[in-house]
Image (cartoon, rainbow over the protein chains, first blue to last red):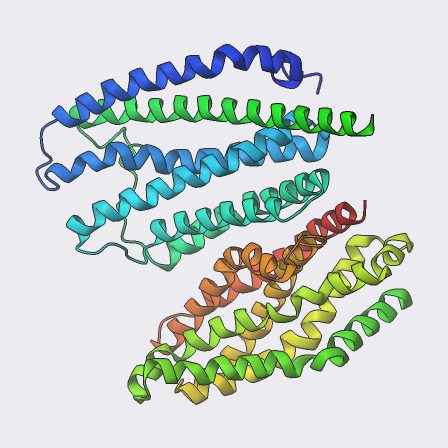
Length: 242
Length: 221
């Protein structure tokens, strides 16, 4: 891992770096969220969706983060599997519950939006279903790690499963799209620029950045917790050995 | 080659002979297919609308059944250690194990699938396509399922864990096979779905053993 910056690969440096980086990202996230929510709630009503358009500011970034966290989980798993790097494994372990939480938030807010807009809490639509499958993949990863006592084995088994999931996610996504799609296409990454007026676009982007910073902050905090837990465990073992 | 054939013979015999083999899987399949009309109601039109889908998803569930023992048995009695020591690469060994699993449960289930679907009210012309989908789908289920079985080696509650790991990964083959059969019934082009199912099965057969072997090595380390 000579190519990786030392503040990420060296546990001592990482702890020193994350000590100030985690709260910093947290403060950035809070600031951006206040601005984004203020602009979001003062934005005019959408001519079709009315007030429910405001759910988008919570929903869309959550869905983005749900997928982004799986990408982080995949990269961290790859590094932990190939280089057997302990920090990478702690990062993978820390990312999974966060990703599951963001995915769950996306499902719940989507459902709340679907009730007034589509007239139903849930439809078996392509994008909804593929997010649900993503949530199930997170559950499988967490369940696999939780059911193994040997931490080194749990780490490697989890990494293999995460990589199998990374290969399968695009296939699942496109197969489900092919199966049935009702959800509107992406307005942010539409051809010829975002298909959305600025009053909605600005708060959405602010909220996206806020979610991203919040994820960064929480991820660092969880990795720190994991490192501390492992250190405490090692110290307890040393003490028990006399 | 003879080593692989001997291994295939052993795997198939173990899967076929011990604990009822295909009888249990087919029995489970028949049980699920019997419960469905009881839950949904006996009206032929209503049943016919869901016949292919129900038969298809019951097949996916039935192929989960014997996965638990695919690696667990050899892991517990030490045979997996011996298989790892043999000059045959572990990847090939895993491939042969899944192939044996498919021969012993996937193929009998594929033979039972058209019967169950017809019993639920699917049209007779659909029978060959159901059989084909079940054969290909069974291959995908066996090889993707093998990954779950190998990963949950040494875990507590391995059987349930295997199902939790594997079921989300079953989504694409279930969609492709179900789509092909649905299109056939509505008179739409159905070859695309079948081709995608075949492609998924081929990818599972090619890549699955790599993940299985890595998981087995990890469990034995």
